[in-house]
Image (tube, rainbow, N blue to C red; front, side):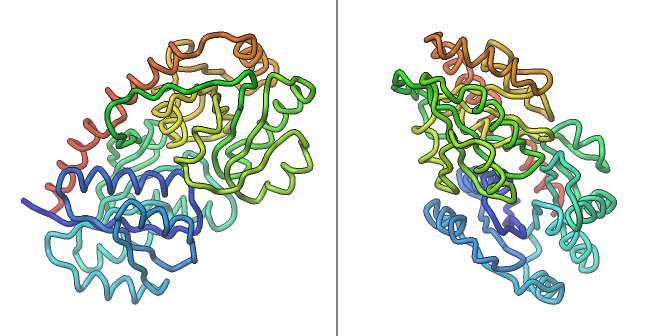
Length: 337
C-alpha cells in the first residue's frame, strides 16, 4: 500500500535531528515514497531551509499554534503518516493525532535530559510515548520509552565509498555540533589547550550555541567556523573529536566516517555501535585530556590512519547506509495506516 510521510519538527537550528531528517527524506525518496517536512513554526532557520532546497526536499510551515496543527491534520489523506522528531513536535503531534485518530510515529533522538522547558518537554514526550509507534536511536533511549524499536541513524551516501583524503603535515582536528554543555565543547577546548604550542595540529570548531563566547575565551588556538554546510566541513578536517557528556548516535560521526575522517570519541550513548576501538576509530571509556592526548600524539607521529578510515567506511556501508533502517521504517509505516 502506498503512503505519504510528513516529517514534523519544531526546528530553530541545524544539528543531529535536522541532519537525520534530510537523510530520512532522501531514503524515502529513494524508495519512491512521497514525503515532506512540516515545521511547527517558521524560526527563520535559513541555513536549514537552504539545505532542504538543495536536496529538493519540500517543506512548509504551521503558524506555531495547536489550532494550525489540528487544521492541517483534518486536511490530510487517509494514507498520510505524521513522523515526529524532537520533544516539542512529539508532544504536539501525539496529542493532536490522538484527538483526530491520525497515525503518529515518533523518533526519539536525544540522550540528554536538557534544562528548563526542554527538560519538561522531554519528560512529557516520553510520558506520552504510548500514543505513538516509537523509534529510538539507541538502546539506552529505547529503554525509557513505551515499546520503542531501535533505529540506528544512517547516511544515504552516493556510491561508491571510495573517499581518500589528502593529508598535510598538519593534522586538522575538529569539533562538529551544537556548542552546548552536553556536547562537551569545553572539553574539546581543554584538549586543544594541551597542544597549544604543538605545530603538528590545528583546531577547528563547526557549530553554534550558548557556549560560543565561553569557548572563545577558553582557548585562543581554536578556529570557530560557525554553522556551514556539512559537505564543506569534512574536507577541512582529518580527525573528529567527540567529547560529549551525553549522546544517542551522532549523525556527525556517521558523516565523518563516510567521508574518510577518523573519529576519536568518548564511549557514550550508542557510539560504541559504530566506533570500534582501534578498528573503525578510537573509543575512550571516560573523558580524559591525558587519554585523548595519547591518541592524538600517536596520530601526530604520522601513524597511518587510512586502514582505520577504510574499515569505518565499510561499516557505514554495511550497517548505517539505510538498508536495514528502511525495512524497519517501511514495516512501521505500512502497519500504521
